[in-house]
Image 1 (tube, rainbow, N blue to C red):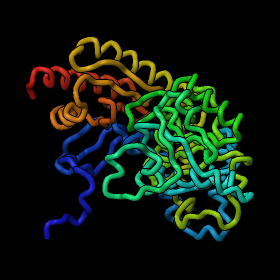
Image 2 (cartoon, rainbow, N blue to C red):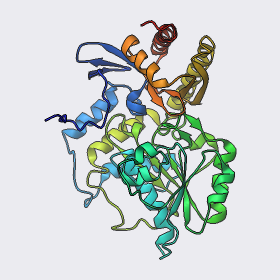
Image 3 (tube, rainbow, N blue to C red):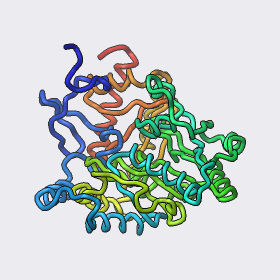
Image 4 (tube, rainbow, N blue to C red):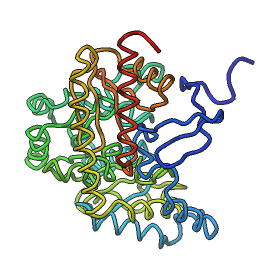
Amino acid sequence: MTITPLMPVYPRCGVRPVKGEHCHLVSEDGTRYLDFASGIAVNLLGHSHAGLIGAIQKQAATLMHVSNLYGSPQGEELAQRLVDATFADTVFFTNSGAEAVEAAIKTARAYHQVDGDTTRYELITFNNAFHGRTLATISASSQEKMHKGFAPLLPGFKYVEFNDLEGVKAAIGPHTAGFLVEPVQGEGGIRVGTEEFLKGLRQLADENDLMLVFDEVQTGVARTGTLYAYEQLGVVPDILATAKGIGGGFPLGACLATEKAARGMTFGTHGSTYGGNPLAMAAGNAVMDAVANEEFLAEVRAKGERLRARLEQFIGNYPELFEEVRGLGLMLGLKMKVEPRAFMVHLRDNHQLLTVAAGDNTLRVLPPLVIGDAEMDEFFEKLSAGAADFETGES
């Protein structure tokens, strides 16, 4: 038998974490790593946040799971908090980002089809987007590497270049139901949607009675310095998918929608066995306790500005390696002049610094939102050392 017990779909590296301490991970051999990957924007409160741990422990000892056939005091509380803090009127809870995007796709289609118009089913999506790994979400993504081996894809998606408003206008047709877009492309290289592009999508949606769906799985829950990125981009969606940071490390996602957008999501149209269970809701409420206040959000924005300013200054020392700094808040990317994965591996294996590679030759910098000056200083020490000996071929 040659296949591994864990299905070999991940090229797992030699780092084997067994413990987390604030902004560091400790591997089973005792090596300490500075974690500026955060489980790909998940561990926004770090790895040992007392409030999150306490809430999960308390709920686990009380009630972990019941069917959604019953009332959910815990779910009602978190849903109300999200409604109060966002554009949304209603929330459906999921276990992951892909499920949240699936729910958003269904909500957008149901908006048109609830009255019997089955011709409006197509969502315009954008090249280099990443929406998940289910059949619907890979179909919504234009990346061939995600499609290979899983044909046929699901129909109902049309791809256009990101930030190309004229391309969107040309793509709208009789089957168009709406737009599905990341306001900041994460896997695609920390590419921020322009004001003209995003406001243009909102205007086109309004003019043509289409749904504007934001995928804020990676940008959401304070990562960019506001609870959701749409708040600082001046555009309000009809539907929004959120996950990653919303559980602080516990599997949790949600689809948020206006009352108008959710008009087709009625009894029996959607469901989830585990979605919104009491344990997940405890995690989500603990995260909201920590991040959903202006003091915390202002700190994220200030940290993001300091980190970005230092990165802008830093990359000038290595013009052969780095091109520019991208992003919002503490969702930052270093556009590189070399393939970023080799540099990511070098930082990890030689300097115990964890980052994440992305498309468009970009290295993602996604620290826990609770970093302080000490972690920021340590980051630049490791990054500087890594850039110096990577450039010279030393290790």
